[in-house]
Image: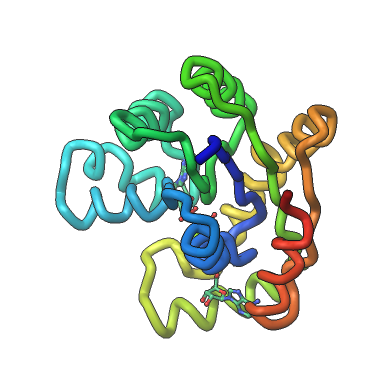
Length: 188
Ligand code: AP5
Ligand code: MG
């Protein structure tokens, strides 16, 4: 099977994790959700978790060196590079590191899918999830800060992928199935 690398991008609450699980299964990709892996490390009390927790609780990005180490160790030993990244990369430094990593692995980026959802809908979704799951960064102040960090640090990457010709903008509103169908239409 040929290599395939898809990025799922978008603001907090855009549906990256929801769609990542569905796409990874449908396309036989390894789902690599940096936020989920960090939360597992926090829950397990690992050294990575201990170092990441305060950044996550504040809605700040975890330092790039911790993230690239984590991504490298997740990719180590894969027979083929078939990966769906959810929530990575999140700033230009991480995007540059990813380019280097893919070059080392002789793999190309298939697509960078950006889910678009307006701010009111995001707040509505995350307030609801806060009641259901109790994620420590799903309170109103932290959600607002995560949105600001997204706008300042992550959103500029969309231009980067647009210039590379890999950006696919997708409307992230409507049912989960509708969003999934829209994403699939954008992928080769
Ligand atoms: P991360 O875990 O990536 O969180 P996030 O970007 O804030 O996004 P969420 O996980 O909250 O939302 P999502 O887009 O996955 O949406 P979901 O499918 O859950 O990052 C958390 C923190 O970890 C960061 O702040 C940072 O500290 C750190 N971090 C992670 N990666 C990093 C990196 N690369 N570098 C540095 N730091 C990093 O959906 C949201 C809700 O909406 C759910 O309840 C869902 O059921 C619902 N929903 C989904 N789709 C729909 C729909 N179509 N209609 C209605 N509701 C829907
Ligand atoms: Mg997520």
